[in-house]
Amino acid sequence: MKQYQAYFFDLYGTLVDIHTDESKPKFWKAAASCYAFHGAAYDPAELRSEYSRLCAAETERLQKAFPGAAVEIDLLPVFRALYQAKGISPDEALTADTAWAFRRASTTRLRAYAGAGALLAALRFTGRTVILLSNAQSCFTRPELNELGLMDRFNRIYISSEIGFQKPDPRFFSAALRELDLDPADCLMVGNDPVCDVDGAVSAGMDAVYLRTALSPADAPDVHPKAVFSYRGSDLRRLRSLLLRWD
Image (spheres, rainbow, N blue to C red):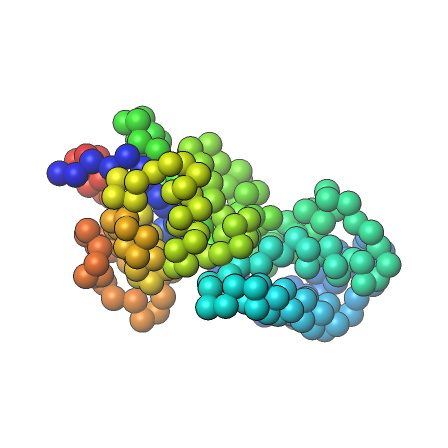
């Protein structure tokens, strides 16, 4: 069977089970309390409205700069601007701490899927390059990787908010391929989204494995015709044996 030089992994829904909810009033009350503690007084409804406005404005700015692209904003400037609107000049540490408090308040479930860490470790043990390619916010994801003990399981980590593009945009894939000097034909993408992960990888010239998990899109198929193979479920211990046997 074909041996790959590098394995790219999606994170949420592929290696990690997560549930966040930013819709409840109690969440915005907690977020407003965080800002108020540092001198930026917001009513919860005001904070929610201004946060949404700033996110939309930044997204529109990027879309105008890159028409037709799947862009990804960085939320840290949004968290910073919310302070500045109230006359507070936050340093980097306060901005990052506020972003992390925001994420923690919205998260009701966060855990690695069974066998996730062992899968990544086993691939690295065989000498393969293991890469994270995630549509996510760096200010949320990097602390979560540390919390889950997965940060050191990857050779390299690419997060869409740091690149400015998200899957399935080919610019996100090519940023990693170019920096690591990888031939896409020597790379395998593993992910749970049929469009972002599988179609995106195939468009970039890579092979892909499709995982159908509970966090896949609701209308996602069980089998993806473009994938090298499809795998249903979130117990990654069997996937590890399949990939290692495949190698």
